[in-house]
Length: 272
Ligand code: IPD
Image (cartoon, rainbow, N blue to C red; front, side, top):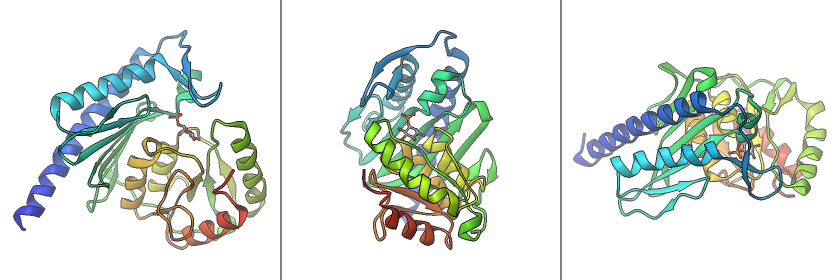
């Protein structure tokens, strides 16, 4: 092993340990501290794009821990954290992915934390406290559900695929997304809308969904789940020939990915 790869492995192990610790602490805080009368603290892109006081407090908890442990790293968080950093490592954080589920007391929400170096995701952790599960991956080292290896299911025929998706917060976008689903639903086994993109990607990784796609995600929604899905054997991407992005995020095992990507291109799933 060269000095350089030894150094990288050491860095990955350190980032994983910190991400697991931060996600566990934030998850416990969110699970145990959710006020019964939790309300909306602010709205963002539309009246249904909400932030609760708990999103803000969870992001503060995570960024505080990161600043303590790795003060030179950059941080990008859904609720406004935006630090450039000098180390080349950037943390991408969603303090609650599935905020609307959390607001309503539905269990599908998660803390999502990824660490990137020079634009490449090295570590991803998605912690879903109400499932009692933590999904994690390190680049080149596989994906895990708690301590057990995660693996995608083998690709089914297109017509037998269980496909997860989601909807954005803007009415025009949602109308278009519903039109894509209207055309897709008779062609596949069924559609699921869980309400947390990070968990959807991990469900592909764990073989609980055959595929997932969505238009309009932000990096904090997909950064950790993307790596976890890939390390579990999924392909991820956007429009044909493009990496996943805000335009379109697709995850599925080889053999299904290509067919879904082609169909979504035909259906115009990448535009409003
Ligand atoms: C949302 C969730 C949802 C997806 C939305 C996301 P948030 O993230 O991941 O499943 O459909 O597009 O914005 O707002 O709960 O962090």
